[in-house]
Image (cartoon, rainbow, N blue to C red; front, side, top):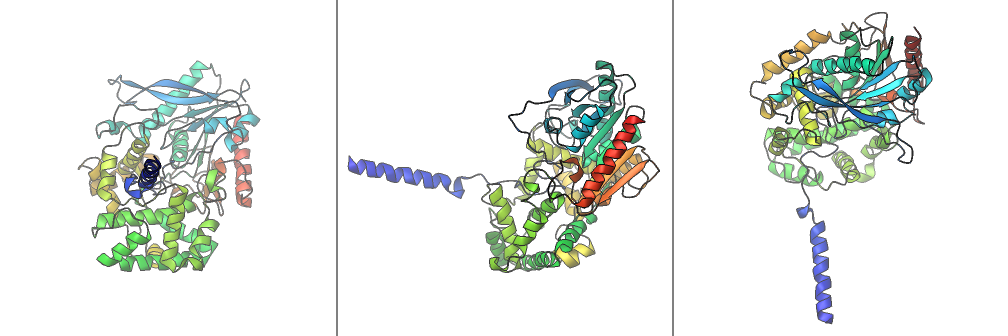
Length: 508
């Protein structure tokens, strides 16, 4: 009996150890901190959490929308999800609409009464709405994300959804003399600004936080801003990253070197020699720095105090870790551990297949939808082509813009070649007039100088009723969140300015 017990314990121990072995864990296709077209797994605008003990302010509903807003012969419809709350509403008050972006939505934006826009709603007696973007979350015009279906995923269709939603709510709630003010952040910040420009009869005013209204294929300014943010914080931090990249570049030239890099960075499988997998590796490693700089000290979740430029640079400059490449690897390990990941997934073909076969309504579908939008309208490809980046950050062109562009044909359709992508992006700027030709009025456009997306925003007034707010030392959509202990003076001042504009529009 004793022998059987011992054998049983040995077997149990073997099973536990074997179950915990990395060999039995699924290799990630896209690690959670791997930035894809400027987007992490949570979308371009991170959402916080609301105290679960507090009663929800919002109610969830669906509205019937046309799948094609511009073809009168196509009568097909879909159900678009939205949330609303009348908690702060006073008869005659304005209507605030948060436009959803490139991820599924949840009621956080309506239920959290400490956010800047909900505080304004309480002060002005506004009814608030949150509208989920078509082809994200539960708002699926089609049951699939095929190339044929994705033709209905455009900013033009999304803005028409906003316009028809406003018309429907005016009727449903019997609003008389409504004053709709749209809000949004990042991509949806651009939508908010464009909504006022395209549909001025329904949209009275707009706030577009960190909205990239300029489309561009080769977004070299993104990594230039990442470098500047690190260098401005501490030049030693940026220099260490640069030196670490030089070491990686040298090792990438040989089989033994790639084996060493693979081991150092906990790559699931040894890096092959092909250019696509190597570029995908560089995208993952640089994404560690991009994601932190993009959201550093935004007062939401881990970005408020943990994933910040100071915490990043503390690790990058820690000489006890080893040489500069070891510190780059340490940053990678820090983020993988935070996400509970055991290896870095670098499988370019697997990544392409994942996006080709993504399903509507899931996180994989959100990636497919967003990348489609970049191929079809915006570009936003964060290449390392800039001489500033080459000479101060990466040492050479490790992610050329053409690497991004060719994925459009690989993932969606062969017709989306280089010339098609460039012409589509040019058409977007013709349609919306870009950052220097924006014609909307009663629009406030906050941007942070540390936000890599600010280079595509409206930074100078294009008319006397456009109010750009360039906020020194802040990151992506920082003005949208509740005030926090790390807020820069410029952010506090920008929120006050934004508040003044919104209240004046309500009272005009």
